[in-house]
Image (cartoon, rainbow, N blue to C red; front, side, top):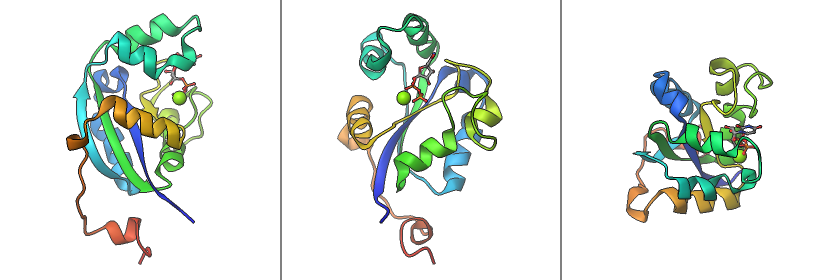
Amino acid sequence: MADIQRTVVLIKPDGIQRDLLGEIVGRFERKGLKIVAMKFIHLTDDMLEEHYAHHASKPFFAGLKKFMMQTPVCAMVLEGLDAIESVRKVVGATNPRAADAGTIRADLAMNVPSNLIHASDSPDASASEVKRFFKDDELFRYEKITDRYQFGEGI
Ligand code: UDP
Ligand code: MG
């Protein structure tokens, strides 16, 4: 059974610089994910220490943090059936050159850390990232006439 899940997406500074916001948001919209929150955030060192804690000891960590603070990022919460895995599939593998054709990273990027997008990788990560980046009153509940195709019986 599919679950309705929420997942956090950040469009990274390379997406902002390369004018790919519309293209990337459009891909998630066309897939059938519902945008329940969206805003710009200028990430801080503290936020990145927490968000990328799994990379804290890596040689690329300082460069990764600097890259993520070059511009604001566009932060979103997307809702949908199995949204966490669905979004990761649409985003593609971490290394854009190894990502499957048709994914955002394969189609639009060439490099790390500049692989355009962060997306939550598990229910636990999604829950802590929603809390890290959003206040309760920034998350919206609303009905769309397309909900029945994307959340309901599919007809
Ligand atoms: N990253 C990097 N060098 C690496 C691995 C990762 O710069 O060798 C960056 C890259 O931007 C990646 C982010 O760190 O998206 C987080 O890494 P993770 O392994 O969580 O990959 P993701 O979940 O983003 O696919
Ligand atoms: Mg990750």
